Amino acid sequence: MGLFKKGVMDMNRIKIKFNFNVWSTVSFFIVFIIILPNFEIILKLITPANENWKHITQFMLKIYILDSIKLVIAVVFFSGIIGFISAYIVTFYDFPLRKFFKWVLALAMAIPPYIGAYTYSALLSYTGFIQTFLRNNAGIKVNQKFFNIMNVCYKIKMQQVAT
Image 1: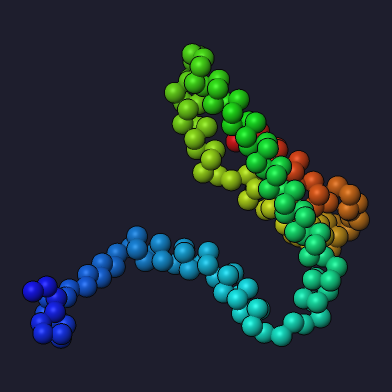
Image 2: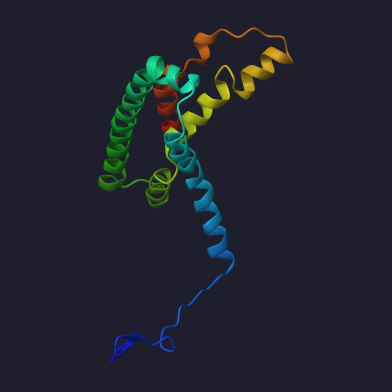
């Protein structure tokens, strides 16, 4: 007969299990924090555009999109080369600590280098912590060419080499 009796749902047979424990609660909050910026984007889509957004779309959005595409291409290229060479060496050659390097190489995939590159770029940008501290507290005028966002590809490469 199943869950239904003559077209009416039998509520005595339906049991919904809510298992709240520490892991599910912590997981929920982590997912919520990760998704929170998406809610901000959706909210901005339904509100009228202000002067800042008009300026971004008119002058900067094309450059940002192209830089993001360049960044993705650079990450895929360097990750592919480094990953292929490392996997080839670990697979076809026998050397000390080979098993250790198998695990270390797999672990590097869990820590995406572009996150490190964006973090470095955020810290080193004009409004970032490092430059703000140098300008306001140390009185040092910083040359912007050393902190350019276009150096992200180099930072990704260095992050990959470090891992």
